[in-house]
Length: 175
Image 1 (cartoon, rainbow, N blue to C red):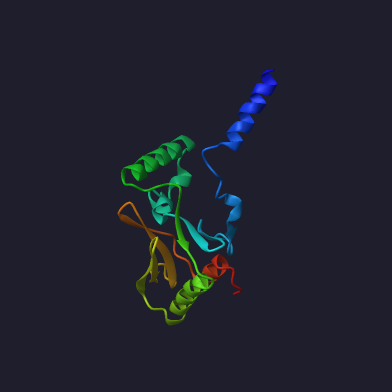
Image 2: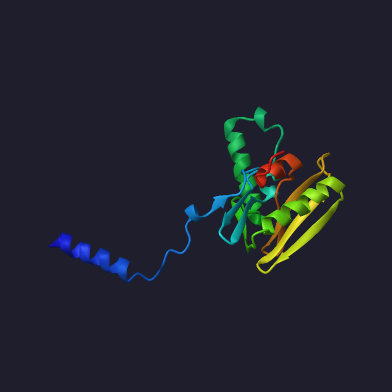
């Protein structure tokens, strides 16, 4: 009797549930390869740029940490996480999801590629209905590179810089 009751309850909740699964992680397909904890995912007419804030990698970086004891490294890591939390730096992934037309990602790649040819240093703002996507072209790392940026909680979040070969991997292009 208990098994029949459980069966009825489970089936009725599935049939009259209050939600419908409309999106799953298996629906998203990576465009190229993940580079520097950044990836571009596509799902029919929607794209997602998944990134980590560059500050999470650099904040609290201690080049002498290899000479410290394991307990001192753990204390420093904990202090770094507390500092990130107090300064609003998120340790996880950020996502920028935007609707695409069949050639949107190709146009985005062309904008980036043309800047690599001219080596012009500037920040390009791409305005989508879902928000702004920033492309920061610079040579602060002694190499000409681009960083992706998005708006989050009244601040701009940027990725680590990408050189041209990394952009080609990210977009699934041949070098």
